[in-house]
Image (cartoon, rainbow over all chains, first blue to last red; front, side, top):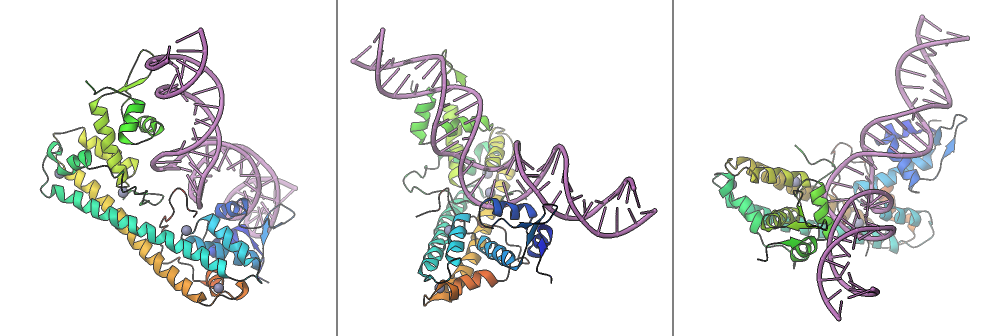
Length: 154
Length: 154
DNA sequence: AGAAACTTTATAGTAGCTTTAAGGTCAAGC
DNA sequence: GCTTGACCTTAAAGCTACTATAAAGTTTCT
Ligand SMILES: [Zn+2]
Ligand SMILES: [Zn+2]
Ligand SMILES: [Zn+2]
Ligand SMILES: [Zn+2]
């Protein structure tokens, strides 16, 4: 049978770092697995499927809390699934709101960028001047759009 | 003259927490200011303008590194502003990329949502099944889209 | 003088990992 | 039998950009 994995096997197969698997266990998304004599974690099909589920949710950018919520619903198979729908709808709302914020942001940035079509010295740069005098968006109450991944360079 | 502020004045006027001002100083975005006899920070017009600049950049969701970069350019007024443009263009690229990721995400989520138009039991829910079997996006190499603000509930 | 309102520093917490350190286990090779 | 290397273990720190707390000192008002 190939349905017994050590953490590294699981990690390789699902293309996720081993530390992340341990982290999910620590956070209560994965149950504490059985151990070998030498204290190595041992996983079976059920854990592999559960981790797959979690990774798919993360790929859809759900928070660990949202995922915890879905896992709880999944663990009670007789329950109706209206709540599943509402978690998903809420998350779809999060994405929609974020897209809205980013579109706003893009407009502002393009506007700012247009202030320096003909590069001069930075003292006279329309961009730098724009950034110094731009009206502060304190009424629009725009929350942060969150544009950068874990690394923003390049 | 009203161009001498203590940290609280500056904070109130620019609608930013005092801790954030200290944090920007700690991070080297704001210079270490003069102090009163009693060791209170004292700011003038220049610092106020610098902070305004920083806040505008943050409102456009630049990272502190990007802002540091712009401040450095701003501090050398004789320099050409081509580099200012390239920082801004890079950041516009970050926003565009993020929007692209989020639009992908939105499609996937709508697709998933459509798998449960008629709520049944969670055991048979098309959404939960979809999350368990969905192909893992390992080729598309989609990085995280970052959908949630500092709090994601409600 | 005493209280309110302000300031100071240092420290910890947030999300979701990633990285590092310091060590224990196991299969293969010589 | 013993060493090498790949794997595993835990715990703790680092990442971003703050936010919140604590314990103390200063200034201002009455
Ligand atoms: Zn969400
Ligand atoms: Zn310019
Ligand atoms: Zn950027
Ligand atoms: Zn359903």
